[in-house]
Image 1 (tube, rainbow, N blue to C red):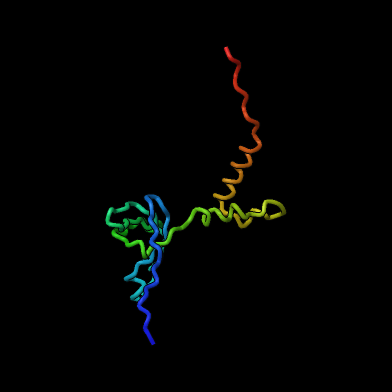
Image 2: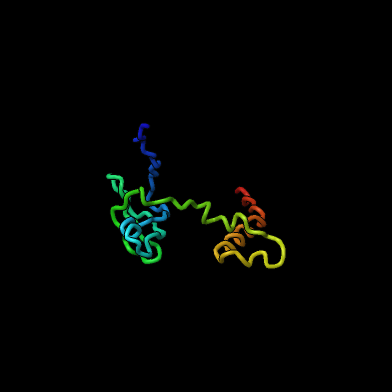
Length: 122
């Protein structure tokens, strides 16, 4: 019986400045400590392929992070409550965040405003 020496490669994602990511601190994780996984924003991309992150909750700088310990948090996930919100019926907006309600209110106001006609030519 032959042993397999193949490795399963995880595709490496390239992150950009300003991306929101979920970061898992490997030292805290492997030592069983709490608080090992948290949301960050990419602050700097180094040419060596590592990243500097800012932890959103604490504003703490996390330096020289390998991309293997990061996962992109896509905008679609952050906006899902707006995209799937029921817009009719009593209490339809109860489960929505304030930001989602503000966005929908602004979108509704813009959609119901007739376009302005250009002024007379002189």
